[in-house]
Length: 190
Image (cartoon, rainbow, N blue to C red; front, side, top):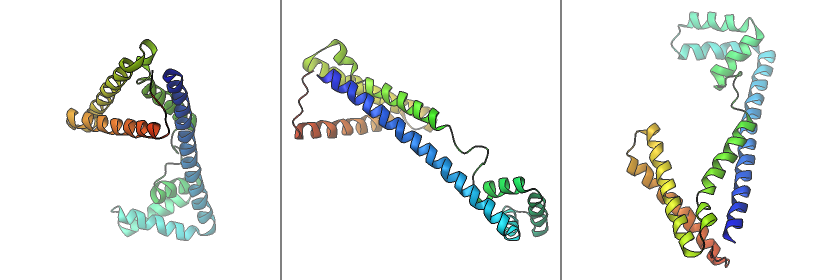
């Protein structure tokens, strides 16, 4: 019944989130690596042009034209240092930190989704019928409000505002899911 469906949804959703996170982090890393390769190629083909770009960047940061010229020349003296500087200054990419591990991101996403998805399922482990449904709504609402409230540690916003927003968005998502289920004829019986 609902418990098996909930667990299947938990696993499917957690896997989907994990795979999506892995693809996202991997793609971001690959894009950054490509941008750095392009800068490296441009440096090889037109070192003077890249030096001029660095000079202009340092002038925009407040160095005098002569100081910016000296800085650019110093950086261009070593190819690895020049590529590092171009990546950081022109692209805004730290070549030594192209983002986190795709695997760590995937595992984190899987675990966090699973934790969130298990909350509405828990009442169905010990109850059946409309009592389980009502308990699931209450437990899920409290969890949503609690998560929203906890976010205020970082945002400094009022607990009621963040908690209420999280609760309303969660209830809206649940309502849409319930509505789709009703449209296709799925009944919640517990």
